[in-house]
Length: 184
Figure: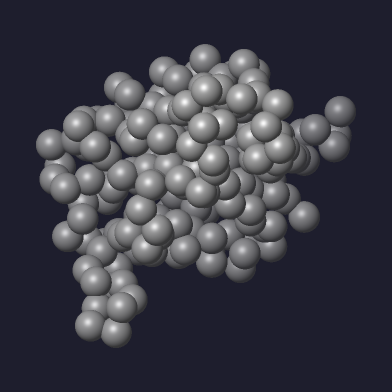
């Protein structure tokens, strides 16, 4: 069973990004993928800030990334970039920790003004970590994920379609990579 790890860079539980990640996870599970999640905001802050590579929590989180065939990197956009808490975790991922993995960025921001934040802020860091197959990604505007009165979320159809297309590409590329590895 192919494995995907979602690195959740949001410091806020229950944010709109949570709904986007949940939909991605549901779509992946329908395709027979095992999905794990690293919620960076739940890792001990002292481990992140003091770069404690040997911390039990960091070792476990990095193991989930290492075991994955594909990785989704999800973050809200703050000040034209991904969150600081996500950066502190990425600093703890081994230098080639993303080598050989298919990567799908999922960002959410307040406006289209930060649409290119995936390209100019995240992709260079992922490349340094060994990522060579980074998909285009999905940038979501907050207004595409509305909170409902019942406490849930309503995701805009256009976003659902884009997420379905991107997850489909992630599935195809991951399966292709796994097949090529088996064939060798």
